Each structure stands twice: as C-alpha cells, then as structure tokens.
Length: 414
Image (cartoon, rainbow, N blue to C red):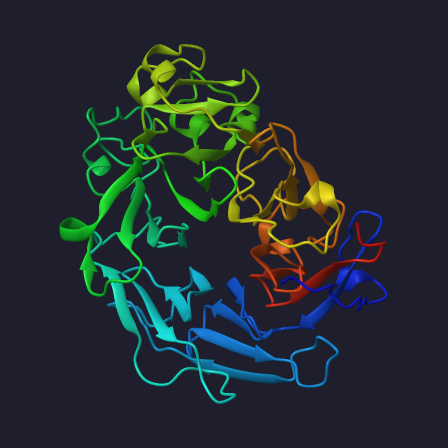
C-alpha cells in the first residue's frame, strides 16, 4: 500500500523550478554522470552510471533526511572492447535488481540481511544483439504478464546507402529492420535467451528508444522515440536550417504487438501534424505516400529534445490529475542551431479517456542554469532518469554531475 511521502524541501528546490504545490530536495550531488535510476521497496536507490569503478551506484539514507549517506559501487559488466561501464537500463522488479549494457540485460537477486549491494555475478537474461556503435543502448521495461521488452536501436540516422552523406538515397527495403530499429520481447523469468532464438520482434520502424514503460491501465507499451537528424545538412535543397532545428518531432508512441512506426521511410512533422516521406525515399517535406500506413504518435514534442526516460506515475502522493499520466525526461538537444538548444526539462502528459493526451506541460525546468544555451556543454544539469518511489515521490537523475532530486507534493492529499 502506498504511503504519504514525507515533505522534505531544499530552499531553492536544488536549483530547479516546479509547479506550485511541489518542492524538491537534493538526494546526492556530484555522483558522476548518472543515467537511469530505480528505487527499491525499502527506499534504497540504484543508479546506472558511466563509471570506471563500478557501473551501478547503490545509495542509502540512514538518517531519515532523504540524503544519501551510504554509497557503494558494484557491477563490472563492461561491454566487449569498452573501457567504461556503460549506461542504460536500471530497474527493481519482481525481487531482482535489473540492469543492461550495450550487449545484454542482466539481473541479481535483491540483497538480503540488510545488505545494500548484491553479491556475485549477475544472471544473463537476454543477449545476442547485433554489434553496433550508434544507438546501442538496450533500455528495457516489463509488462504485467511476465514479459521483458528491450529496445534495439537503428545503427544509423536514416538507413542511407552511405551513412550521413548528403544526397545518399536510403536502402529500400532497409536491412536494419530485421534485427534493429525495434522492440524485442523476451520472457522475464528465463535465462540466457538470445535475440534470434528467443526474442519476438514486438514492434518495428522505431529509430531509437532510451525511455519506455508499460501502462497497466490500458495494457500497452509506450516508448519515447529519438527522431532523425540532419535534414538540412543532408538535403539542403529541400530543407532550411530552421527546418532542421524543428524537425522531426520527438514521438511518444503507444505500441501493440506488430506495430510499425515507419522509420526510416517516414518521419513525423509536428508542424503539419502528420508523417511525411523521408527525403532518402523520395520525399520533399510535404509528400505523405506510404507513410499513411504507419503508426502516428499519441504525443509529439519539438525536434531534438532527446527523450531519455518515460515513466508513468503509479503513486498516490501527487494530486489526482497526475495519477496515471506520464513524465518524460528530456536530455536536451545538440543540433537545433541557429535556434537555442531545447529540452533540458521534465514534461508531464496527462492520461485521459484511456490514453495519453496530445497536450503536455513542462513539469520541472531550470536544469540548464541559464535563460538559453547554444552549446549543450553549457548546461549545468541534463535530466536523464526517472523513478517513482514506493511513497509516491518522483526521483530525477542528471547525467552531467550526477545530481539526483526527490520531488514531492506539499499541498493537501487528495
């Protein structure tokens, strides 16, 4: 049963802005580049990091002030050929601590007898994915029926014959769709599964997903897709620099088995509110063509905001209007010039009439520490991971310095 979250606030909300009635406190500062995050039933926090000392940081508060005063590092799951323990998925689920690197999804039994970190080597649950350099994160989530869902990103921008080369046409059909650019489903309780022998391609035509979550209310998988890049630099006769800054939209997709979101043949134009044919496949920025056959997003965000986590609010601590809705952490853009960079915030999408709405609002902001920035390196903080704690508090991680915020509601419980 959910309990009311204890109200602990920092005077300046740890440097971020929130809606009226909410406040934040800093759980830990300067942990180092932090990625996805999970909170255990006892309140311990597990954070995937980009660390050479241990790929997961385990945090514990022993004084009741919601500040991490015990920190332990564990996990040496280094991908082949890498000197750094990369990055992506982190979860506490069904009695296990789960994580992933670029090659596999793995787990440990939850620590016992008051221990903070698990012992021994993890069990490998899913592996055997294609080797690739770009979009190699293996983010994951679970449904309510014992399945594990894993993103396998596309190893390219737009499946061109010559990658990121001006005027190069797209491969048609795109061979990357066979084992990449989609979501694969596995059994969450089986070990040593491989993509080719045990995985089911659940959905396809998805360029890359770093944030995904299962919605128990309507029994659907939701993912936050990173849209393609370089429309103007690859096709300057068709697109302006302003087009390049705004297009394509970042898409929140509701996926059912067999869904096809249309990458690389199509992209979603948020200004026209429709999918249009990509220039690599004969598009001119207006033509729809075969794109009418593919899945549209439920919610579209501005281009290049980089959605890196998506989390449904399953708690009861926040007011009623937030319950069942989705929070999305935007890591921030790098390629919106000549416009200012965008994103660097946490958005909220309400859930109404059985689905997420097309409209959204900015929930947490101020992470960049300035009015606007031109270079992402100038951002003080970049939102990365999200987690809903057992008491209903929302946790946000930062990939720049490793700050973690705990957000609570200060008003009356509804």
